[in-house]
Amino acid sequence: MNIAHHNELLTRGRCGRCAEKVSPTALLREASCSHCQSMLTSAGRDILHQIKSRQMQWRLFGYALIAMGSFVAGAIPLLQIVIQVMALFILHIIVLRGGLTWLSTKRRVLARISIKIFGAAIATTSLLINVAVIPMVGASAFILAVVGPLLTAAYIEGGLFILRKRLRWESEERPLQISEWGLPAALLFMLGTAVTATVVFFATLLHLITSAEIPAIGFITSTLLESAP
Image 1 (cartoon, rainbow, N blue to C red):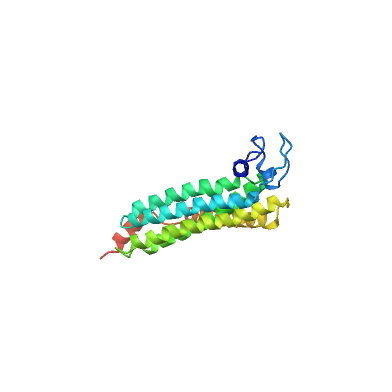
Image 2 (cartoon, one colour):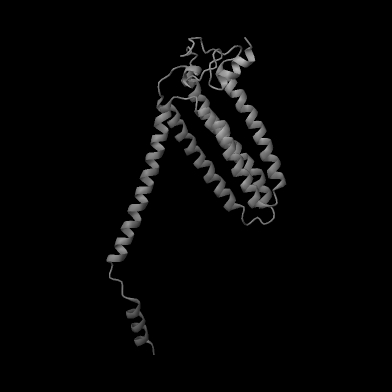
């Protein structure tokens, strides 16, 4: 048996012996193949190490391209932002979404929510930095050329930190941890509360304005004209 080919099949979600499609969860837990009953065990290194190795290759390649593209487009802020967004999208699809497919349904959904919340924090940070450097004419483009790749790397590395813990728990057949659903639930509750409070505040303010006896503009104008000498 070709060990390299066997391991490559496993990383593609197939049995290393019969090459049939198998459940990613079964691969992580090194269960038996549902087709040929052979053990889904990686030779040499376990499947988690192989997934991590593939992710490392794509990350290094992606970060190198972002750095080169940002350096070339540093003097053109709009072009630099386009490069960053494209790189972020591609790396998310290949590195993070590819890793999420190995998780069970419930764990995958919760991990995706956690990564999206973390991404929202990174996006907010990026927006604040972009606004802060607007007055720095001439230097803003070069600052964004450095900050852009750093924030992209922060998002991918943070997402991988979330993902790897879930992959390890999945391989160890652990039930859902409190941190997996507790933190996303708390943050979503806070977000919902903030949105509701904002809507209530503006609705109340609008009601007070419409119900208040505010003189019409014509009445105010005529009063001012009458009082004028």
